[in-house]
Image (tube, rainbow, N blue to C red; front, side, top):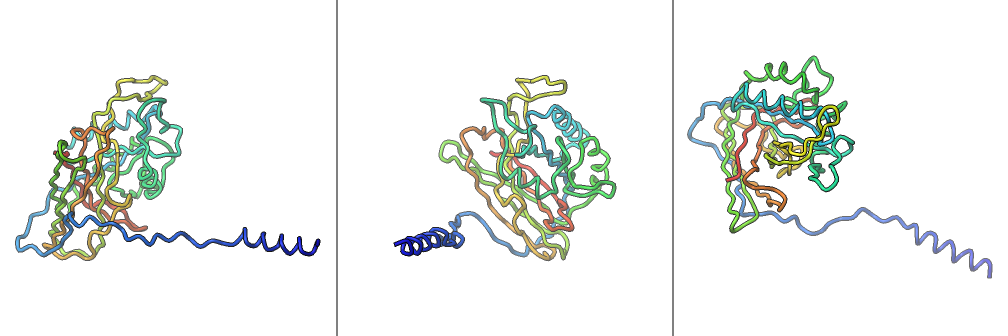
Amino acid sequence: MKKLLVVFSIIVFFTACEEEGPYINFEPEIVDTSLIDTTYISLTSENAQTKNILIEDFTGVNCPNCPKAAQKIHDLQAQYPDRIVAVSIHPEGFAFTEPFSCHYDFRTDDGTNLLSFLGNCTGLPSGGIDRVKFASESRILINFTSWSGHLSERINETTDVNIHLSSSYKADSSDFAKVLVKAHYTENLSDTHYISVFLVESNIVDWQIKPFGIIDSFYTHNHVFRDALTMYNGELLFEQAEKNRVIEKEYKVEIKSEWVAENCSFLVFIHKSGIASKEVIHVEEIEIE
């Protein structure tokens, strides 16, 4: 009888511990075939646009010094009109980004992944200029007090690809907004380029801690990262594009009930996405309309 019990126990043990294989989703990915996705060679050449600069500011509502970084962005945009495009990203994993009770939670999974993708930072606020690791810096994400000097190194850079944007949104008929991106290469290139499309929202009034622990209950949060319409680290745009190569891609996003569409905009940028370089080639922004 004891032998039978031992044999039975061994069978139960190995049955319970049988290794299961990884879950495989056999359902086909649903692709919205109504969205434009095409490429062609244009018979018309374009002059290169003036390159814009992207500032990615990692911030938090419980970060006393973060409003200083936001003010620095405001000052730089005033210094270089229509040249600076900004996004404020609230990652998870920081006490500084913990939301106040019963108030907005600006944290996103994509924002957290972006922080890791760009190499993390030593603290908040911290941000990058065009995702460039400058020679005098040890990482891409640096203190806001260094932004001005490094931005001056990028402001005269040129771009080899023009970005044209158009958006559409009809609140009375759909909760979805669309952006059509047209990328036109003005030179032959051997690089591989990626595209990232973000949705950002401004004019959000909510609490923010300031220096000395002061809570501003009427603080205006701008350029808040809400969603990525591509993968957080971008999606492949084109490899080794020739002059006058045009890529047209359309993206769609659902406008959530807690967002105000009139305060939202699409931020679109073309960039590298490798270990050696994540440099932003060009960036444009368009309001939802």
